[in-house]
Image (cartoon, rainbow, N blue to C red; front, side, top):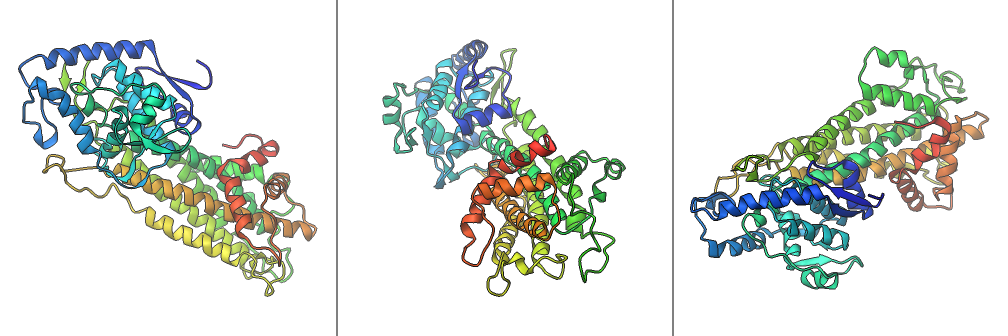
Length: 519
C-alpha cells in the first residue's frame, strides 16, 4: 500500500483514512479478507432468500411495511424501489468532501462482511470513489435514524446508474453517463442490497471526523492567539505556570497553558501591569485572558471524548439486519445515531464558547479604556480612520450565530414511518450545523489574530520586545497578505487572508519552529 491508497478491510477504518479519501482523493482498494467476508456473508443471504420463511430485509418490505412477504420475482424490484423512493432529499447540494466521506464509510461497513452485499457491489463503490464521481446529495432528508437515509439513497442511485452526479471535472451529468465514461457497469441490486446501502450513520460520522480534524487545528490556533492577546495587553504569564494547572489536572487545560507559555517564551511585554503611564496597577488580568487555558482546555477534553466516540463508530458495522458470524441474520437498532449526535452537539457548544472568549479579548484590545495604552480600535489615526472597529462587529455577529448553532439538534425527535420509527437522533442536522460552526470559528480566531498581531506591532514600535514566537506569527501573517491597517486601506482582503492563514494550519506552522511542536 502506498501513501495514496487506502485499503478497506473487515475491521473498520481510521479517521486519517476518512480525511485522506474525503479531502485528498486517496484511492480505495478492498483487501482480500474483505472480499472473502463479503462472499461468505452473501452465501448466507442467498440461502435465507431461498427459504419460504420471511426474513426482514431479505424477503420482506421495510419499516412499517415489514409485515409483507415479498415473492422472489419482485425482490430485485423491491431493492431498486427502496433506493428510488428514499432518494427524496431536497435543498442545496452537500459538499463534495462530505459525500466522499459518506460513500467511503458505507463501503467500510459493507466490507465488514456483516451486510450480505455481494463483492461486486462493494467493488463498484470503490470504483466510483476512485473515478472521482460524486453523487448529488441534498441538505435535507435525514433524521439520523435508520441511517442517513436520503443522503445514502442518492449515493446508491449513482451505483445503479441513475440520478445525477458530479464528474471529476466538476460538471454535473446523469450518473449513467459518468459511469459509462469511466467503464463502470451499473449494479443490479439483489436481496437485501438496497437496504444495506442506506442503513448507516455514515454521513454524520464523516462530518464528525472532519470537524475533529479542523477543530484540533483551531484549538491550537486559539491558544496562540490567546497568548498574543495576553502579551499585547501586557498581561502576566504567571497564571500559565505548570504547578497551577497540576492542582486542577484536566488534561486539556494543562496542554493549552503549556502551548501559551511556550508562545510567550522570551517576551519583554508580559508582566508589565503597572508600567504604562496613567494605568492603575493591576493584580489580575480579566477572565478572558487569565482563564483562556481553562476554557480552551475544557474544549480540548471535549474533542478527546468526541474522538473516542468517533473511533468506536469507525470500528462498527452499522446495518439492519446484520449477518452474524454464526449465520444468523438479525434485526437490531445499531443504526440509531444518538451516540454520534450527542457529541456533534457538544462540539457545537464548546466551539461557540471558544469563539465567545476570542471575541472578548478582541474587544479588550480595541477599547482604549481597557487596552492599557493601545490606540482606540488599534487605528492608525483614530478619528480619521476607525481601525478595527467593524472587524470586531463582524466577529461579534459570527459569535452570535455560533450561539444559535449551539442549540442541540439531538434534543429533538420527530416520529416517522407510521410511528415505527418513533424516536430519531437528528444527528445529520447536528452535523450540518457543526460544519457551519467550525467554519465560523475559523473566522473568529482569524479576527483575534489580526487584532493581536496589530497590537503586538504597536508595542514593538514603542520599544518593547515581543516574544520570538509572536514575531514569527506577525511576520508570517504579513507575508501571507494580511497587511497592517492604514488610512488608505480597507480590511476585507486582510481579514480574508488571516482566515485562510488560520484554517490552513499556517499559524501553527509559523510559530512551531520557535516553540517546538504544539499540541
